[in-house]
Length: 185
Image (cartoon, rainbow, N blue to C red; front, side, top):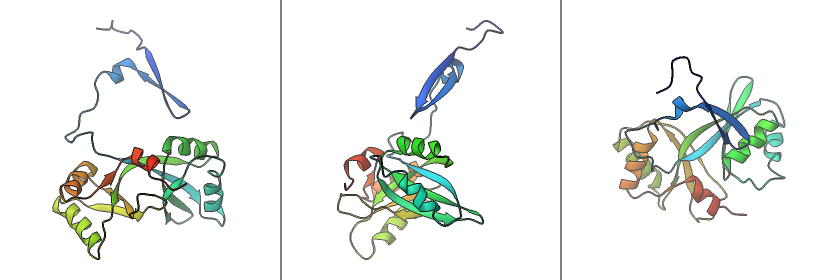
């Protein structure tokens, strides 16, 4: 046990090129959740850009000199700005490139789900999510994957439960690592 008034040692750690500091008392126990950490989540980047002509091109050109591939993109137009939701094969490196070039970036997780063949594929997919009583916040298509199938990103209120329901119904859900091995170059 630490002496009263003793200073907590600082534990440095890195994410990408950013160094963070954590006191050792903050790192005592890992967080526990009600669901397994085996849910294959994919990192989505939300990039904030001005609502001006050429901003989307300026942002995507930043990746021209890198090995980063944009695999999914959705733009949400706001009043004077826009949010660009991106799925890339290397989100840490992409976030570094964007922040270095003064684009504000946030991270969150989504599921990437294979859409099976057939006219009723999306109905089956949404029924699987509904059967777990989970609300879908938004979804968009991915491109550039060589798995030979269409995929969609799904942001829902409870991703681990959505994953369980989808896999129980036979849907394939990709992980971030799957995106590295399945891209078209």
